[in-house]
Image (cartoon, one colour):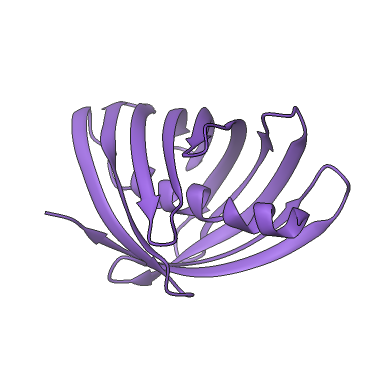
Length: 167
Protein backbone atom coordinates (compact mmCIF):
# COMPACT_ATOMS: atom_id res chain seq x y z
CA UNK A 1 0.00 0.00 0.00
CA UNK A 2 2.92 2.37 0.53
CA UNK A 3 3.77 2.38 -3.17
CA UNK A 4 0.20 3.28 -4.16
CA UNK A 5 0.18 6.44 -2.07
CA UNK A 6 3.67 7.38 -3.23
CA UNK A 7 2.76 7.06 -6.90
CA UNK A 8 -0.42 9.06 -6.36
CA UNK A 9 1.60 12.09 -5.30
CA UNK A 10 3.97 11.96 -8.25
CA UNK A 11 1.50 13.83 -10.45
CA UNK A 12 1.12 16.87 -8.21
CA UNK A 13 4.73 18.12 -8.25
CA UNK A 14 5.13 17.47 -11.95
CA UNK A 15 2.01 19.36 -12.96
CA UNK A 16 2.92 22.25 -10.73
CA UNK A 17 6.49 22.33 -12.00
CA UNK A 18 5.13 23.00 -15.46
CA UNK A 19 2.71 25.61 -14.18
CA UNK A 20 5.34 27.55 -12.26
CA UNK A 21 7.78 27.59 -15.14
CA UNK A 22 5.27 29.29 -17.44
CA UNK A 23 5.31 32.74 -15.82
CA UNK A 24 8.52 34.64 -15.27
CA UNK A 25 7.03 38.14 -15.46
CA UNK A 26 5.94 40.40 -12.62
CA UNK A 27 2.34 40.80 -11.52
CA UNK A 28 -0.59 38.48 -10.87
CA UNK A 29 -1.54 36.00 -13.57
CA UNK A 30 -4.44 33.59 -13.81
CA UNK A 31 -3.39 30.10 -14.96
CA UNK A 32 -5.77 27.41 -16.23
CA UNK A 33 -4.48 24.13 -17.63
CA UNK A 34 -5.82 20.79 -18.75
CA UNK A 35 -3.53 17.77 -18.57
CA UNK A 36 -3.40 14.13 -19.57
CA UNK A 37 -0.92 11.59 -18.23
CA UNK A 38 0.58 8.64 -20.09
CA UNK A 39 -1.82 6.26 -18.35
CA UNK A 40 -4.92 8.16 -19.51
CA UNK A 41 -5.76 10.19 -16.40
CA UNK A 42 -7.00 13.64 -17.33
CA UNK A 43 -7.53 16.67 -15.17
CA UNK A 44 -7.45 20.40 -14.74
CA UNK A 45 -5.52 22.88 -12.64
CA UNK A 46 -6.38 26.53 -12.13
CA UNK A 47 -5.18 29.34 -9.91
CA UNK A 48 -3.13 32.49 -9.65
CA UNK A 49 0.60 33.15 -9.67
CA UNK A 50 1.93 36.33 -8.07
CA UNK A 51 5.33 37.04 -9.57
CA UNK A 52 8.16 39.49 -9.17
CA UNK A 53 11.84 39.35 -10.07
CA UNK A 54 13.19 36.16 -8.52
CA UNK A 55 10.04 35.30 -6.59
CA UNK A 56 6.64 33.69 -7.17
CA UNK A 57 3.80 32.54 -4.96
CA UNK A 58 0.30 31.34 -5.59
CA UNK A 59 -2.68 29.12 -4.96
CA UNK A 60 -4.04 26.37 -7.21
CA UNK A 61 -6.91 23.90 -7.27
CA UNK A 62 -6.80 20.71 -9.28
CA UNK A 63 -8.86 17.64 -10.01
CA UNK A 64 -8.41 14.41 -11.96
CA UNK A 65 -10.69 12.06 -13.91
CA UNK A 66 -10.11 9.29 -11.36
CA UNK A 67 -11.60 11.32 -8.50
CA UNK A 68 -8.45 12.94 -7.15
CA UNK A 69 -8.40 16.56 -6.11
CA UNK A 70 -6.25 19.02 -4.23
CA UNK A 71 -5.56 22.62 -3.33
CA UNK A 72 -1.98 23.85 -3.33
CA UNK A 73 -0.21 26.96 -2.08
CA UNK A 74 3.45 27.64 -2.76
CA UNK A 75 6.23 30.15 -2.29
CA UNK A 76 9.21 29.96 -4.65
CA UNK A 77 12.47 31.90 -4.98
CA UNK A 78 14.32 31.77 -8.29
CA UNK A 79 17.88 32.70 -9.20
CA UNK A 80 18.14 33.36 -12.95
CA UNK A 81 21.95 33.28 -12.85
CA UNK A 82 21.99 29.63 -11.73
CA UNK A 83 18.54 28.69 -13.08
CA UNK A 84 17.88 27.31 -9.63
CA UNK A 85 14.92 27.56 -7.28
CA UNK A 86 13.84 26.69 -3.78
CA UNK A 87 10.26 26.39 -2.62
CA UNK A 88 7.96 25.56 0.23
CA UNK A 89 4.27 24.87 0.17
CA UNK A 90 1.29 22.90 1.25
CA UNK A 91 -1.08 20.52 -0.54
CA UNK A 92 -4.46 19.53 0.88
CA UNK A 93 -6.08 16.50 -0.77
CA UNK A 94 -9.83 16.34 -1.32
CA UNK A 95 -10.01 13.89 1.60
CA UNK A 96 -8.89 16.75 3.89
CA UNK A 97 -5.37 15.49 4.60
CA UNK A 98 -2.62 18.13 4.47
CA UNK A 99 0.94 17.59 3.23
CA UNK A 100 3.77 20.11 3.63
CA UNK A 101 6.68 20.15 1.24
CA UNK A 102 10.01 21.84 0.64
CA UNK A 103 12.46 21.35 -2.16
CA UNK A 104 14.84 22.78 -4.67
CA UNK A 105 15.89 22.28 -8.25
CA UNK A 106 17.44 23.73 -11.34
CA UNK A 107 17.13 23.68 -15.11
CA UNK A 108 19.76 23.58 -17.84
CA UNK A 109 19.23 24.39 -21.52
CA UNK A 110 18.76 21.24 -23.56
CA UNK A 111 18.82 18.87 -20.60
CA UNK A 112 15.62 19.72 -18.72
CA UNK A 113 15.12 20.18 -15.00
CA UNK A 114 15.96 18.24 -11.87
CA UNK A 115 14.44 18.58 -8.43
CA UNK A 116 14.48 17.07 -4.98
CA UNK A 117 12.48 17.59 -1.86
CA UNK A 118 10.54 16.22 1.05
CA UNK A 119 6.83 15.83 1.63
CA UNK A 120 5.71 15.54 5.25
CA UNK A 121 2.33 13.86 5.63
CA UNK A 122 -0.42 14.50 8.16
CA UNK A 123 1.06 11.73 10.35
CA UNK A 124 4.46 13.50 10.46
CA UNK A 125 6.18 10.90 8.28
CA UNK A 126 8.43 12.01 5.40
CA UNK A 127 8.56 10.94 1.77
CA UNK A 128 11.63 12.06 -0.21
CA UNK A 129 11.50 12.74 -3.95
CA UNK A 130 14.25 13.07 -6.55
CA UNK A 131 13.33 13.55 -10.16
CA UNK A 132 13.89 15.02 -13.59
CA UNK A 133 11.58 16.58 -16.16
CA UNK A 134 12.25 17.04 -19.85
CA UNK A 135 10.07 19.02 -22.28
CA UNK A 136 8.93 16.87 -25.21
CA UNK A 137 7.46 19.75 -27.25
CA UNK A 138 3.94 21.15 -27.71
CA UNK A 139 3.30 21.36 -23.97
CA UNK A 140 4.38 17.80 -23.19
CA UNK A 141 6.69 16.67 -20.39
CA UNK A 142 8.37 13.36 -19.60
CA UNK A 143 9.26 12.87 -15.96
CA UNK A 144 11.32 10.28 -14.14
CA UNK A 145 11.58 10.12 -10.41
CA UNK A 146 12.04 8.11 -7.29
CA UNK A 147 10.02 8.36 -4.11
CA UNK A 148 11.41 6.94 -0.87
CA UNK A 149 8.99 6.45 1.99
CA UNK A 150 9.54 6.60 5.74
CA UNK A 151 10.21 2.84 5.87
CA UNK A 152 12.98 3.06 3.28
CA UNK A 153 11.00 1.56 0.39
CA UNK A 154 11.57 3.27 -2.98
CA UNK A 155 9.18 3.51 -5.91
CA UNK A 156 10.42 4.64 -9.32
CA UNK A 157 7.94 6.54 -11.47
CA UNK A 158 7.80 7.68 -15.06
CA UNK A 159 5.06 9.85 -16.55
CA UNK A 160 4.31 11.59 -19.78
CA UNK A 161 2.11 14.61 -19.24
CA UNK A 162 0.46 16.77 -21.85
CA UNK A 163 -0.39 20.30 -20.65
CA UNK A 164 -2.91 22.30 -22.68
CA UNK A 165 -3.87 25.90 -21.84
CA UNK A 166 -7.60 26.02 -21.11
CA UNK A 167 -9.79 28.84 -22.39
